[in-house]
Length: 331
Image 1: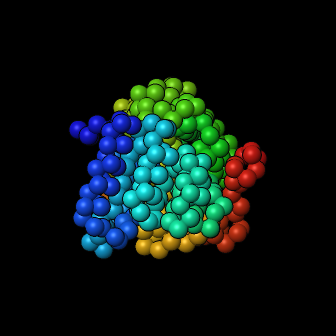
Image 2: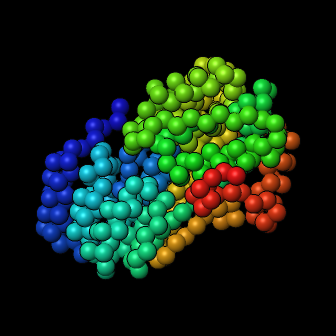
């Protein structure tokens, strides 16, 4: 069972004690910090990928790092400020929702370094890490269309925001590249942060899509996706994971996962701060499909050949994948 999330008052007490302990011990060296967003570091998806990157750094260096899980929106800025007061450097915020508060905190602490994932902040002491999610989604869209027997595939997003539309847009482009006649059904879980952590609702949306004829569904919904995958397993349909390699969650059901290397972003940020915008796509190894023993029987040689060619063509510029956040539309 996962530990209970701390309250706002608990967060304040934690940092008071941490600061007192640091002062008493005379700690002078800076420790890096990572702040996870809603859903927590054990969401088996986006946040957990960031945690794995921090753990990799810890294992390689033998050094500690600070961390905190956001339980409600009010904690974002408070956690960032407390980490800054402690002298943590760099301070990494997982998720676009941390962007606005980090911009304020970074201005107040110009000598410290900050890193935000999935948001862009134009300050000299901030690194913004963005991903070309549309490229990885294009590849899994191809696989979904090629695996579908009904020529109907689905997508379940978390919070209805442009970033998640970016996933669905790339997915649809890839599907129609592989099969121009394929139908793509898109559903979003909600319009609030709770949409990232609602497996029951995810399962409901997936079941509705399966009832309409969909036989492969891609979830880009954080912890909500766990419900989608369970529904796919129960209905004997196929599912596609996101962010982390989620193939192991439902072996035999997971066609693949669109991995988004937040772990690499956090690991690199802890190792070396680079100001400005860093964008990671297929070329940089920032996104791709996941292949392992859990989905080996589901991925055909034809799929692999088509995906490998498409990957090369995207990297080489022969295939242009529309970025929803740039175009504001998928066509």
